[in-house]
Length: 101
Image (cartoon, rainbow, N blue to C red; front, side, top):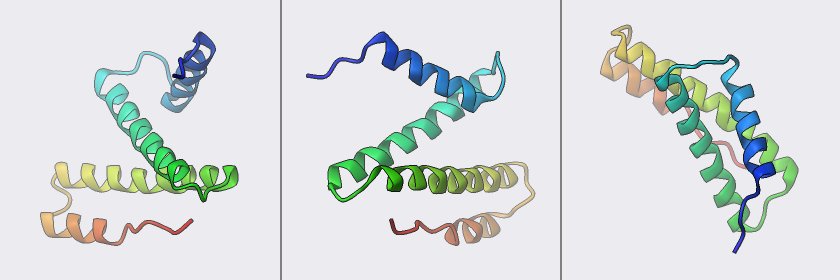
């Protein structure tokens, strides 16, 4: 069994703070950060379990995933604010495709 130490937790906390870009974020900003972090971790776990991934691949996938996640968040905001119809929203999402490693 692997138990995380304070150093691991502090490292994760510092990385999350850097991603936030400011102190005293609101609840929904924190929630968005945690959801994005969960997606990154899910991707990493699946790739490591597949057994055919290198550290360089993982870094590249993180960047690609983050960029695609930003696009999804932008399109979702535009749809929520009424700047896109449901059809336009789904069409925009349709073109966000995963890239092979």
